Length: 257
Image 1 (tube, helix red, strand yellow):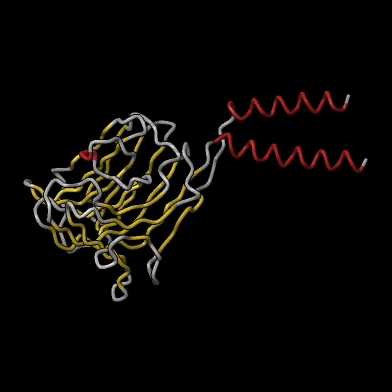
Image 2 (cartoon, rainbow, N blue to C red):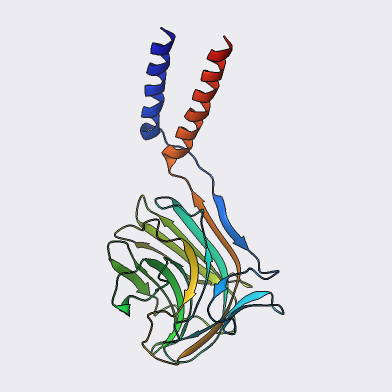
């Protein structure tokens, strides 16, 4: 009789995973203020390195150099909502050069012109014909390419910017907020719809020019600081975890009876 009652209660609780909304909190996956060397992996330490004077990470992005720097994010899980926050200082740019920070997979390609279908979401600050523009771009695991160039929201080199990305796989919404760090002046705020999914192959933050041969030699110099990557479990995951704890407690209680 006790087992039957338990099974009925357990089945009811499982149904609540779908029917009951759960308020989850953000969990920090990675955080770095660059007060010391963060130990990122790079194939060119002269162009990607921790700069001790500003205590920020230096990036010299040169088209067609196939250089990179990245940090693994082993705790980042596919299917969960995630958020990226960081500061960017765009210093100096040639035409067709940029500063970029991306969620990437193992091929470290953050440019779809490479002829294959990588996975990534990237934020770029670039100098192009219309001027200095930020843009967001992605390629999903299905090969869907999307993004937006913000031609009417030019940035100013030599100013620190706060950047926030918030991606919700349940809705496909990618929310973006960019503003000047010192004055809080808004640069842009937007929500884009991502069609497709990102698998567990996206496992690192990266700055990379692999596959980008558009303007060989074009150089962009920038700094990155105060990175935080966080995620929030799917609503049912928290309730399921609570049920699991309850089952363990019940089994222990039975053994003592």
